[in-house]
Image (tube, rainbow, N blue to C red; front, side):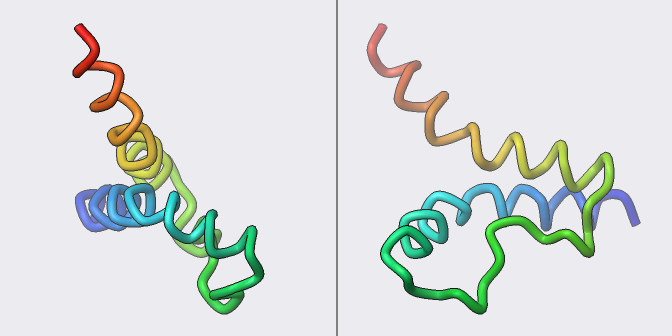
Length: 63
């Protein structure tokens, strides 16, 4: 289902920042930053929306 991939992409995008910081310090190597098995248009869109949402929220508060 397309919505399943979209939701997984959004979830992985939201948690990508935490996983990225953990990977930098050498922790959580068993957790991937990006799920290659689910890669596709809907997953990619969800991932971009999820990963970009914290940054867009911070930029919106300045105004």
